Length: 244
Image (tube, rainbow, N blue to C red):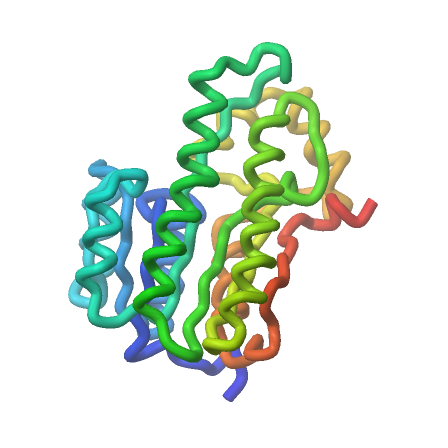
């Protein structure tokens, strides 16, 4: 069975940061492939509409994923086949302007929470399961005004490789998907800056920003049987940004 024809029926998928953008696209893509989707995010109207979209094929966890209560909910699962670590935050600013508050928030959300959720999640996984960390092209390169973000995403790329090696004997695969700038509610404000948009298009050989569905397709592939020999890999969905 190829990835394109594969169904994820009877699979339970947990997606963090699922209410909008990339996380929402991933959740809906797995639903379309027959999976039961647990969509997690802080309470919001977007999460409410996602609940309606998932219907009986999903469950909503309106939780703060950085809290111990979220780990307790993972412990209550009878089955977890796929974990998508998608939560993250960015404060674009000059290196010398980064406050300790921003530094701590990004380290806590982008790195510490991903580690803790993964550590708890894999305890409930068996052979054939997958973990996908949503990182960034900034986990492979450097960029002005993104020092802290680059640092956190490089950290998760390292975590991905280490987890992949350690969990391989158990048959659990661990990979990352590293997108370029994706058009979401969060980034549309950035793209309204003509100078920034010119910079982005200049850096992407394909000449366009990505869509959430581009990332979701990469995630589906890495979780499919078509990628059963792929682990410890970072799949760049960057339009060629890092190829230069």
